[in-house]
Length: 354
Image (cartoon, rainbow, N blue to C red; front, top):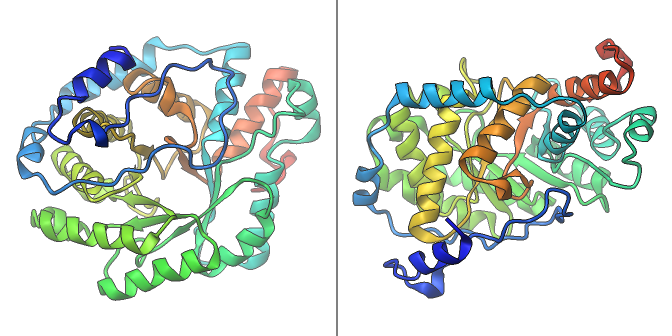
């Protein structure tokens, strides 16, 4: 459906035309897109249990068949593969969330974000003037100020994991104070976790209220809501939690903390992006998506990019609407790009550590 007809359809929506943001027009694949947050923010909506009820039926078998067809019939080779891998880097939240993180480790991560590729790879690909970099660096709160200082002037965002990451099991007042502290230190993106027990108990109003309050604590910083999908047990829970998060004002919905036993999987991702599509059709607002946890190979990043392109369209291949949460992914992409140039794979230790 064209953006014009979509806008016409949405103008009859119960929210009224004044609250509708039409789907952006199709842009050329090589059109530059600024790193800044450039789309209308999702203001949220009242918790609509009827809308949620309409999204309850999730066919796991159908989702798995769709995912299998996407990954098997799409083969991206040669220069096209290199271009898609560069796109994956531009949509990356380069992350360190280890118990042994230090200020120096975070500075090294930021240095890698500013210069993600070896000079010979940059020259071989002819991208010296392009400044292809990860969209953000993601750290724990104690390292936000360090990352902000190290990335100053680069245009790379600083994201902080917050709200008693990874479980979210502290009093709400404590979690809100953590958000406010990270924003005060300079984080412009906040990744929060939801208490999964609220989903299991179907306490949708309580979950909605918590996320609304978190969104208010973020101020101008963008809110990414981590669902912890590996803990939610069913795709129905994933779908409903996604809808509540978006209704409460999430700018992004995110799969995992990376600390669950099962993290981002393509069927879960497909359920979430279809929730995003349904929310857009209902409200006109564009919501971002971030798979995280276990995405460590270049091949896996291509599968996720194909999923986004096929299900939501070209606009969701930009960093203001799509991110990878990743730590080791950048190294494998760099190895693949070197193979593209030389025909040989290199060892990981030949690439600067992230």
